[in-house]
Amino acid sequence: AYYRCEYFLRSSRKSKERMSDTELFFVGTYTKKEGHVPKGCGEGIVAYMLDKKTGSLVKKSVLSSIINPTYVHYDAKTQKLYTVEEITHENPESAFLIVYDVNESDGKLTEVSRANTRLVAGAHVNVYAKNVLIAAYGSGNIVAYSTNDGHLGTKGMYQYTGDGPNKQRQEAPHAHQAIVSPNGKFMYVCDLGTDTIWVHSTSDLPEINQPVHVISTPPGSGPRHMVFHPSLPFAYSIMELTGIILTFAYNSESGLLNVVNEVNSLPAEYDGLPSSSGIRIHPSGDALYISNRTHDSIGIFPLAEGKIDAKNASWIACGGECPRDFAIDSDGKFLICGNQDESTLTVFKIGAADQIDANYGTFPCNTPSCVAFATSNP
Image (cartoon, rainbow, N blue to C red):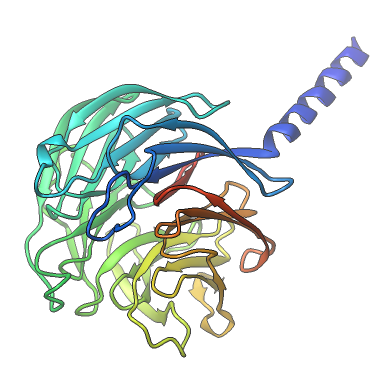
């Protein structure tokens, strides 16, 4: 019995080691040409398997029965994939939030439920507890649906108002992301159109009440996305229109954010137009990563006790044109970058948290818009 037990334990360990050699991830793609996506030709939602020994990618499955799945979110607790379709003003009644079961071996998706959101340009989807949160860029609002193991129920909505000084990009509210604080008490909505991060209580979700705080960012900055430090009371937000990273001190009891630092996400010598996009924090909390589309780069910013060490920042070429989004794997060892206008994915090997050790090359993927590992992403 002892030998059989030892054999079983060794086999289990080897099995787990083999499983950790690969990781499934999903890519949402633009399936149609849009004003900001002139080359839109994506296949839908594409599942890939990353081989962590070789850095190679294998396309596992494709879900093509969807329009512009601009953002995808994998919920590790329920093993469901959530996606929102980006539909323009001409046809908002055809925009859906869709939930899928995931086959973990090949990434095949089976629809569980859907809801007609009627949102214009849904930009981000997230899951908190038994609620799905959607930020809509075009209609400038936030929507929440209750969910029970992927089955969608009651809907709540909050409409923002206002504008900003950049009349081409800030003529109205443009909600770009909704995330929840680490303690689950507050929801933060980045509104590019009004230079605001709106803070709501999560206590009544899916009903969304008046904001409890209104956090202003510099005029014309355009907050796009934000992340929280995994263990320290800090949050970081990337300003799309100026390329500035704002570091906030985060009060977990009140939900208030106070700016403590501003850092340029672009090299000092860059004199082009900023167009920052993705922001991710390394699982260790020791580095912040930013993608910049007009610079075609990923900036790497070491974090010392939660504060950005700008002097030791570095930049790497993203391996393609227009790095709209990227994701870091669960071990913090690989970064996958989606190059929208190049129609490629680039695979990078991370060494230390703030260091890229290798570029494993690019792989074809038509007009990627979002990258999400089958673990979790903000």
